[in-house]
Structures are given as C-alpha cells and as structure tokens.
Image (cartoon, rainbow over all chains, first blue to last red; front, side, top):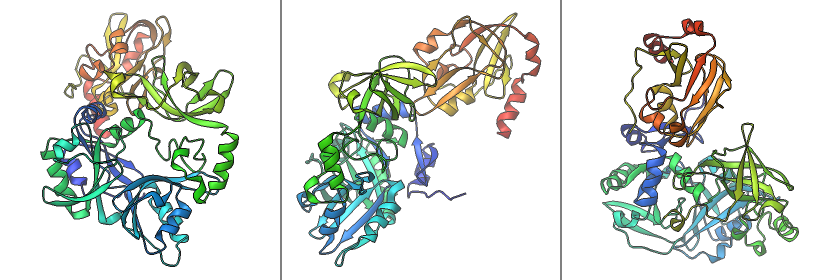
Length: 355
Length: 131
C-alpha cells in the first residue's frame, strides 16, 4: 500500500474533526462540519481550503518563455511580472495533460500551479523538453497553499480588492505570503502561497479572522456550480481542448504542442462538447452515467452532484455537438431510471438566480 | 442538527446498517445512526413504489449525500404499504432523527419468522465494533 502524503496542516485538520480521505496520493480533508454548510459559508461569507497538495513547478532562465510558449496553450507573452494566466498543457492531439495557472514571478521566472495528481506528469513533460537556458524545478514541497474564498474573504483578511489574475507579496498576520487573485469557487477571494513551515501559522490566523474551514467536498460542489472543469473528471488527455470548451484558453497562433490539431477541430467543429446541465426531475447525476439526447445520440456525465444553492441535481457531461445548445432536452440514466435534464448556459449558479 | 449516536433496544438490526420496528404484522424500516453518519447529510431518497415487494437482504431504495450513493437493504421481506414522503421531501430528516421521523418505508411482513435472523442492539453494536 502506498503511503499517503500529508500537508503541513494535517494535524490541524484532524484536530478540527475533519473526515480525512485519500485524494491523488494525499490524505486530505473532504469535510469538517459538512459539505453543505461549508459550501454555503463560501457563497455567503468566507471559507478557507488547504490546497497544499497542489503542485508547484518553477521554470527559470532566459529561454523559460520559449519553453512555456511552445508547451502551454495560452499566450505567455501576455503575462507581465505580477500577473497570472489560466492555461493548458496539451498533447499533440490537443488533449489536456493538465490545466494550470502560470504566474510570472520575474522577467525570466515563472511559477506553475498544477493539479496534485499531475505534479509528476507536468514536471517530466517540461523537464524532457527543457531548452538550453531554461531550468525546470519541482518546488511543490517548499510551499503551503491556502485558498480563501467568498464575498467577505477580502474583508476578513484585511485585503484590498485587486484585479483578477494578478499577484503581489504581502504580510498577513506576520506571515509573508504571495497573494494570488485566483480561485476555483466563482466567488471573490485569494489563493495564498507561503513557505511550507509557515502554513500552520497562516491557517490559524485565517481561522481567527472568522473564516470557515472547508474541505475538498465543498471545493468540488462550488466549482461545479460555476462550471469550472475538473481535470481527471471533465477534462483530460482523451478529450481535446475545443470539445472541452477551453478554446478560449488556446492561443492557436503561438504554435504550442497540439495547436495544429486544435485548429482543425475548431474549423470542422468538434463531434462532442462538454456542457453544463440541470436535472428537471428529482435525481442526482453522477460521473459515468449515460447522458442521452433524443435524436443526437449518447454521451456521458463527467461530474455530477446536488447543487447546494439551487437544491437540484447538476452536472457536466459530453454530448454530441448537435445536442450542446442551451435548452436541449437530455435524459440521464440514473442506475436504470431515466430522468430528464436540460442543457443550460454557464454558469449553472449565479447570485441573481438564487435570490 | 445531527442526532447523537444511539441504537435503541426495541429495534432489530441488519448488519448492512438497517433497522426494523416490528408492530404485529407490519414493520417500519430505516437506516441506523451509523449509516447516516457515514454518508453525511442526506440530500436524496429514492423510495420503492407502494405495492411493490421488498426482499430480506436485497436493496429496496437508495439514499444519497452530496458525495455518495448507498443502497438501502431490507432487513425483512414484505409488501410496501407506505413510503415516508417527509423523507422524500426533506432527506435530512434521516440525519436528524434516524429512528423516528426518518423512517423510510412501512411494510406488511410476508415472512415474519425472518426476524429470528436479525440482530438485537447489543449484537449490532458488536458488528460496528468489529467493523
């Protein structure tokens, strides 16, 4: 049996009574008080997530830009020091090795924050393609990473609003942190990177400011309500970025790996598309369930849950392109029972809708 | 708010974490405190049809939390007389009161002698301890 890795906050989670589960080789809190109250805390006030399991990879050197421009889907040249960008690492076929955020730290130094499960694949992918004058390092073990999210997150942390996808260094309750204006919940907030040893102090300070500890369970339902895809569920090497609805993160003229294939798929139109849907009957869709469109054929649910805010079943799934327009009627096969669903526009949840 | 851990003496238990409250030829069925705690807050109950039959040791319905789905196993066989609509409408009732308002179905027993195979509270606790 493989030993599960623990974040620097493991003891804090256990002390708070978290339910710990294996996740991507890590022992992580799935919930403290419960998925639903934690989800609501983030939608109405502020919640903190330990995401220290995520990987950090640094790329440095005079050719760092060239390496990233040739491998990542978005246009690295649009990044200035102090800014960040959502981007994809793609295969020759346009499949997605990982989706990640790249931060430009300095003129010739970049930080990639990658999914925990993809830390090694991304590192090796880039290491194998290292250029003369670029150095790729896995620095994951140096960092603790805490996401603080919610309409009152900034107020509780005493931070001023700033533009999304920017970052700056700051001191928070005595801890030096990189304050990233990014997140995975659809709420305002920050992701705070600190030195690994400082993570417990930072965690305690954030809780003392009245922020609710939240587990991976709520992180998943929050991102699903706003239709952020999850790598390993909704996106992966087997689906190209256009079919996955991430064409907006692909600068096809930069010549990155897979750009040519993606240009073809875009020109012809993909056969399938990843769509958000809402159940029109009482049922909760789950990953792997068949998703049928009357005339167009069959697809598959890639993520499903109950929406804690809307109190209906919601999901993401691939359907034939002809069935991808909002309003299209679908049927989900819920363990042998056919339940009606409907394609909707992104995001599934918005504040106005719930009011 | 979730109930405290209890296993009432007057109920009979199935090792798959289900209970039966027998009353003459009928019984109320539900899931134990342990089952609801393992699942977390319930958000969906898929009941059987009234008039259908349930068989001891077989699934008669499903309960779901945000993250998980679980079959509900019948501790006894019989015909479904009533489904607890309150739980269909508010599944978290099971978390609040698993042995009272959170019952799942009422059945007419077809093989009352099956009760001999069920566990009393003490024996069920042992199953949990050994789990």
